[in-house]
Length: 112
Image 1: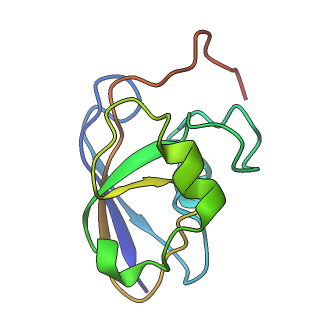
Image 2 (image 1 turned 90 degrees about the vertical axis):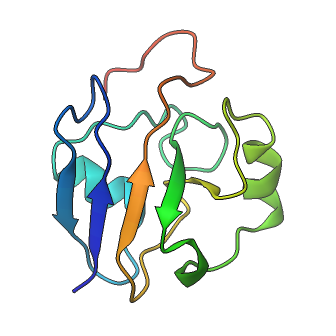
């Protein structure tokens, strides 16, 4: 079973975490079911960038992003070559190491 290693984030996951994931689950869904409340203002519809994460390890195991995700990522704060929207990045066979950026473009935090 693949794992998602979440690097420490000051407010969402201060100590970091190691999460069990099932193949085909989105990074966002795995985080949410484990109490890591990554923002997702568009309710996982790939219409915003609030769930942006950087895949520090395991990026090549993910399916390629599609044009819609790429267009959304162009608007993300702190975009890097290994950036993905966590609602679109589906776990494959390899472990992933992710970093949740400190900021998003969201002006007000949604309370999901």
